[in-house]
Image 1 (cartoon, rainbow, N blue to C red):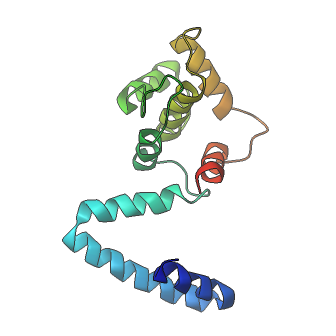
Image 2 (cartoon, rainbow, N blue to C red; image 1 turned 180 degrees about the vertical axis):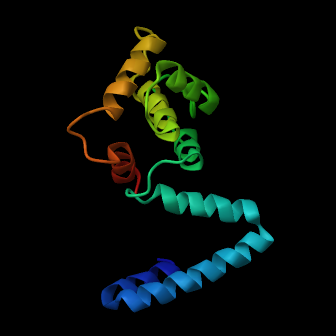
Length: 150
């Protein structure tokens, strides 16, 4: 176990809101230092933090990071459709979904269900059904992602 993980475990055992505020300030300082020396790495880690949190809605950086790691049923990895392409479909259909969530879900459907039997319309229909599921909780796709990957 890493030293940082051990510190966090100790912190979690006795924490209160003031401890949380102090820890947040320290971690913020660490990120400020990292931004100065390696801004791309800082951005990557902030995205990873956001991606691990089920209450934080999808944004483009999170969706792209999640899609990049997909192992598709057809043996490929990563996106099947680029962000711009999925956003174009979203806008042409007049769907009122978060574009980042739509990108993630459309690629996830291809990744999990990719088949020669399906055409693009089938994937769009499945993605639409997943995002517009009336009895799903708010942020359902993000909650599912976090449950599977963290």
